[in-house]
Image (cartoon, rainbow over all chains, first blue to last red; front, top):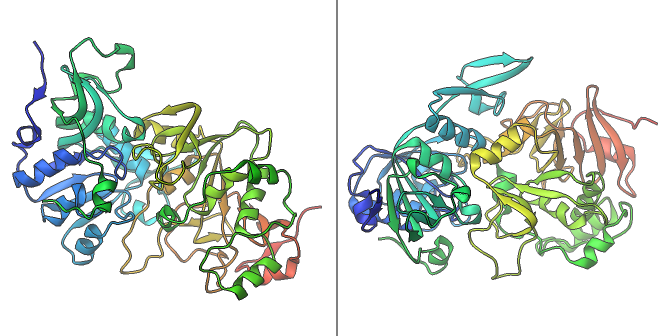
Length: 236
Length: 262
């Protein structure tokens, strides 16, 4: 009988090694799996490559992981946000590498990685500094740039509900990067507010099919990044 | 990009019935300006006496959006456009973080921290709204399914090049978001911007000096002074703001500007 439930965030992230590539879902605070990130901070893995759209705010969640010095490289589209001070400081100090990727190219690189497509041509960024040094090719008289699919060792994502098979439903705009990231990691770990038995989710409504999910962690009352930042919280 | 990144604070309040009603077909009407609190009295006087206010530019843009359009509004000044959709037109707003059918911001302190727009501000959803993941959202954008994108600008060149994400300064934290995808994929791109920078430098130029967002992507520019098309011949005036003459615009444009076609 398939049951992907894992007892707690700490157990779920226990085997993430130093140097791992980790996709982290979320667009700003929406969909940021804070409890899984905090467990990763506690666990101690370092020299991580983080693939995420942003770099967190305040000193909680993703920003706290950066502040703890665990991240060697960030692949993202928008590494500054309101209340985002940790990444800018580290970047200016040369303490973290940045690979800046247009948001849609980032999404498609992750989608492609998960779909077994090693690379693809896109018109996005042609003629800009972000296309420099990349292979170009013309299709239909229009210039395109070659971008590579991304895969990761782990993906940490947040959902609203999952069943024991790992089928996931999301909450509004918290969905964002989670579905493509779930497909592109060797091990996908989802934290959800509720876990139900197989059969309780209408199969027509499933957003991420369970084949893409390895571990389901029940986090009944997830923290909200903006509330923590407003309260001046820091992790740890 | 800067225009987006700066959009987190000071956004307009939700549309009210009053300003929607006032928005009907009134591009040349004098409307009391709602300047930022930081504007000096002198600057307010100068702005009020010449050209369109921020709201009036937004209203002018809204007049040109056909009924039924699927529209992505950039964060910051372009977001104002949603307040001025003429009566009787129905538009569907797309926010690239994963929502079609975005509605106005909720009252302060209300809303859902996981129902946000691309500027990470809380929004609402309209009847008929849909959520989707990032790969799907950018398939809409890159695949040419959106009718219009309204973006801010640092510079627009006479050939339609757009720079709106970085000044290239050494100490800047580079951030691009979805701007490069929007200009590459959306059918029409409008730019909504002040005609000159705070320092008085032209933003419409012969060639962009800042890093590009895209080459030859801008169709039309709306500023406080004029509406200007980007054509194969360069900038061409479409319409002057009230009280503004052609020479005034030409003197503040860093490239040749052609008179309107009769």
